[in-house]
Image (tube, rainbow, N blue to C red; front, side, top):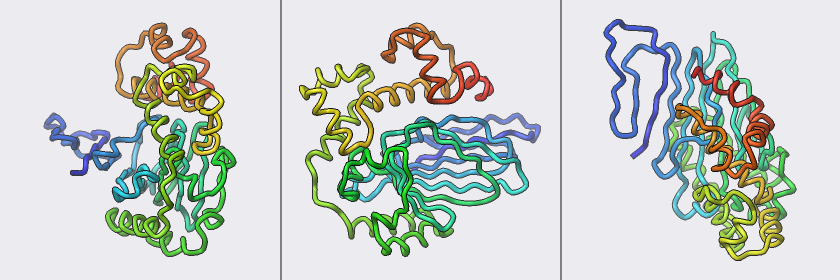
Length: 306
């Protein structure tokens, strides 16, 4: 079953009927002048690390679909975004980086984006669409054939890595074809290029998953203690397969947790939160938030309309 969420700004129909909620789908019962729809496979879930500012007008659809099961060791999910802001003001889309490499198709071009070490910001205008492949942490190393840290903060033409055969897949990815057709084309492309299993790649992915799921991992020393691996071994593994250091991954995922707390609303005890997320004190947390997100926590709170 595919989950959906839908957000919109009510322009008023006068009946005051509340939004109807059924399982993982939420739809506004009012007429909308802005519409953001998220569609996702349950195994993939909703987007994480998004700086969710309101869309004043226009339409946007964000779809996140799982790959074929046998491709899961290499690929986290496929993502598709379609926006129609014709006649509307441009919309600034922002997100905090993840420890993932992406293959991205947009505007007749295909690029590979290494792990981005800074906040992603993009001003969306007019009407367009993007198709992306989000590789698992470590999962791009077998395709690239070199240390993934070489790609950190860089964007390179995808043809350098996947060859001219990428063109046929690119045409489908950028078409108006239904999501299911694009997912089938992506699966077929990667099935034809599926690498041999790599134990080090799998270990790197498992370690990143563990950092994500175990918030008690606040420092690299915690990961050393829990895994029994030496700090230098962890650093070498992450540089070769993930593209960034273990410390970077820990800090970004803890920052993701803070952003999700903001997005969910509610009061924040900054002193306790700083301790929970592994910061020395409240000031260090606020400074880190500003350095990565580009706003102070108070400024971001205002952007959310809280």
